Amino acid sequence: MAPPADARLRLETVRLTALFGRRAVLKDVTIIFPAHTVTAVIGPSGCGKSTFLRCLNRMHELSEGGWVTGRVLLDGADIYDSHVDPVQLRRRIGMVFQRPTPFPTMSIYDNVAAGLRVNGHRGRRELDEVVERALRQAALWDEVKDRLRASALALSGGQQQRLCIARALAPQPEVLLLDEPTASLDPAGTQRIEELCHELKRLYTIVIVTHNMQQAARVSDYTAFFYLGDLIEVGRTEELFTRPTKEQTEAYITGRFG
Amino acid sequence: MSGRSVRRHVTSGLMTSLVAVLSFTAVFALVLILADLIAKGASSLDWDFFTKNPVPAGQSGGGVANAIVGTGIIVGLAALIGLPVGVGTGLYLAEYGSGRLGWTVRFVADVLNGTPSIVIGIFAWTWLVRPMHGYSALAGSVALAALMIPMIARTTEEMVRLVPHSLREAALALGYPRWRTSLRVVARTALAGIVTGCLVGIARIAGETAPLIFTALGNLNFTTNITQPMQTLPHEIYEYAQGPFEEWHRLAWASALVLMSLVLLLGVTARWAIRQRHGAAR
Image (cartoon, rainbow over all chains, first blue to last red; front, side, top):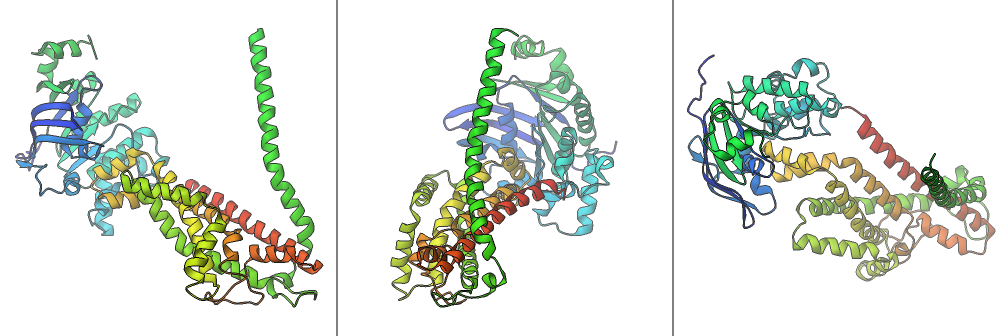
């Protein structure tokens, strides 16, 4: 494997607290996501893991009453700095949601090209190239190359989710956030996405929220366990699962709650 | 079958018949109206009816070309004013209207929606006809637009609200600015519904009579000048149906049939438009 070109890049949070109004749903989270790794975020429902993910691309502040304190550093620069435009930032940090969200009025091609077009890329040939590359990266190209003009809704659920991954990859973000990307998929679809994680970490830094501990164990290099808004423990995945240092972590991964 | 199961089946059967009868009643009114219109109006629909202007009272022959063209112009102009404003308002209400301003606009739109159309006509008379020293098609269009705007604003809002929130988030997460998310993703997804709302709105105002009495007034002659009084189908029906002449009654029946067909046509187009958008894989 070639050494990553931008080994320096990494994402980290420093004492990040996320609130809805006056209620903190995420408290004092400090964590580092090294470049070209997959970090799984696990924890029971309502532990704040989705909110955490949404803080990383400034989506949390779009929710009613959502705001944060603390810092999120992308390559050393705070993304919550006043001169950072959240719209521009979101082009550097791609996100894929629980349920596939293809734009229903757009074709497969236009869906993938959407993030580029909004960025001002119009050249036909450039778009063609990027769309093909993104679809190949998302392992969808062979299935759709003959019907790029068809409606995105014509695809199956798993294909739609891979389309959404392709859409997130097309603008070449630096970080990819996956919010339970396989929650609505069948086992085959899930497996495809997990394989993708392995391939895509060569190019991106990936944070994946998952409900499924086997999935976390399969796809991630690091695992972070959240409980009731606190980051309980983070470490190398195999260590966290075999030798958890905190009692809550052990209780959760052995299935005693959650 | 147990007793309970039998009772369930009977209840189900009874209820099904009941709703069937009720639906039939609803449809029956439309069928009755259409049948009556066709029986009394269809025979008068000839080339002259569509191409000739009215002849002096008491004479036979003539047509209602002036009213047909007038309706086209006045409704078209009203749509030109009302659709952009209405759709824009609806989009604003759905996407940005969560604050006090949104609440106020929504409240005003609802009140305006419930305002009798004749009141709108009187206001248009006070604000347009009087200052301009004369009845005009333009005043009629403005009155109709005022009727149309709250209706279209509210349907647009409903349609836009139906677009799942996840779609907005997907666009925002992709680096879409808010306004582009609203226009390129949300509004486009709701487009079929918005278009239907617009067509229904146009159909609604096409048959309005009361606001036109105070504004466009009516005109026995053919005109395309929007600063002058202009004849419309509803107004022409209103005049002719009251008149003493058999010939006028004949024309009124035929005009009613034409107006009804226009409205039906708009409704059918609206449905067709939806199916096209949803069926076509672009």
